[in-house]
Image 1: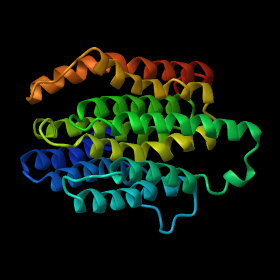
Image 2: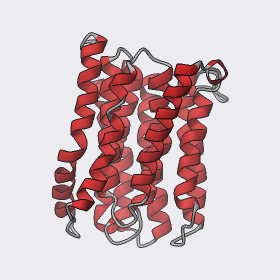
Image 3: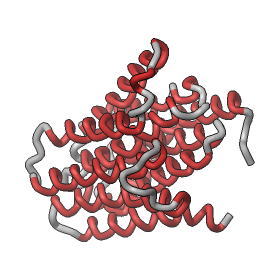
Image 4: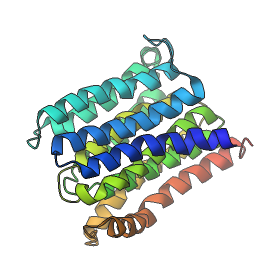
Length: 284
């Protein structure tokens, strides 16, 4: 149990949290973006390595590609986000989407040529959901809180769906991603003042995309269980519509995040409940 908690919570929380704290002390927008992206991906990769070891490169299986796809996409994001400084253009939202879909295609490389009509329909639904998640959160330029809660809820929901659906290892990876995303709250005081929202969303999207695709196409998890997860991102629009705002303090951001979580987590809980009901319950 202690080893599991270390892998799922301590490793991603420390990796992302320490880098978020460093980002919170930095006055450089470029460095803050780099550290947030690096922290989220490092938290996920650290959990993967602790549970399954670092896979050989080049990877040969879809599960091995799950480790490298976010790292390669993250490296590109870091170079672009750091190189462009405060003046992010189209690549600020386009590159994460390309990275998420590119990583997904790489993970599903051997399966895509054999897709039938139903699988192409699922691929279309998946693409719409991923685009909605990306565009909704990448548009949040002034705060990371909305992106953090929406992506964190979706990742946690995906993790529980996978665990209840009988694919515990990938489920652990998704939960570790949720923990890493949550740990970035330690950078929130500075993130409230500079444009860090897209960086956090970008890091989450390039990890979550391949993970969700693997769950949909390469596991026995019911597609019905995954269907509610894009609704986690409706919380972003609802919070804006309700006029909710966070104070420029860590405490204020925590309170704000809790309020948004009330909107974001019900779809994740619904997804987990469907997987629990259809997958035969908890594997433990």
